[in-house]
Image (cartoon, rainbow, N blue to C red; front, top):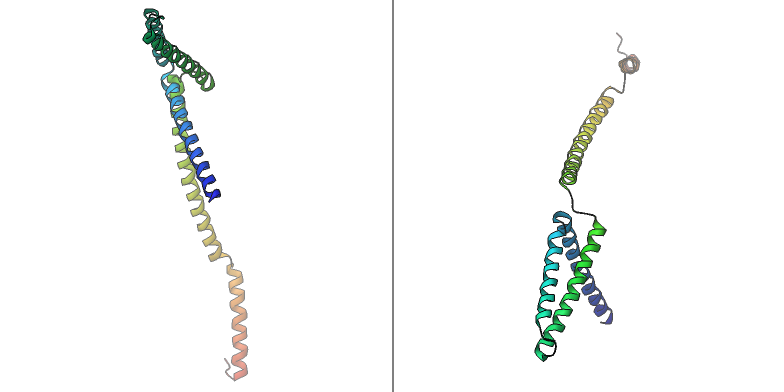
Length: 168
């Protein structure tokens, strides 16, 4: 039972890791396609709004003090997210350009066409090889060998006929 529980715990951890990696991959793909400018601008605007609300709030008021603390935590999270976006963009490179898109699409199409052509070429090679193997089986014995074998067989038959008393 302990081993099963450990395996189940491991499976849950792996599933959680997979979900996190898939989420990170989606973010990276989105950043690579669209760039980080819009996302960074949105986060910057949110930080500015939080700063404006903190400035309007009275730090002596107990209710507003809680609000200020929450806003500071939110700003910290937003700054971390901004840094994470910068790190991700640095890791994956800048936004993909139209020329890079074109190159990637053409490369993918080239690979597809090359694979199909290779498949057809291999099929034709197999067919050609089978034709030659058929010819080899059919014509492996030369006409001279066939005539020689026929002559030997006729001589042997004539010998049997002579032994039986059938003369020509």
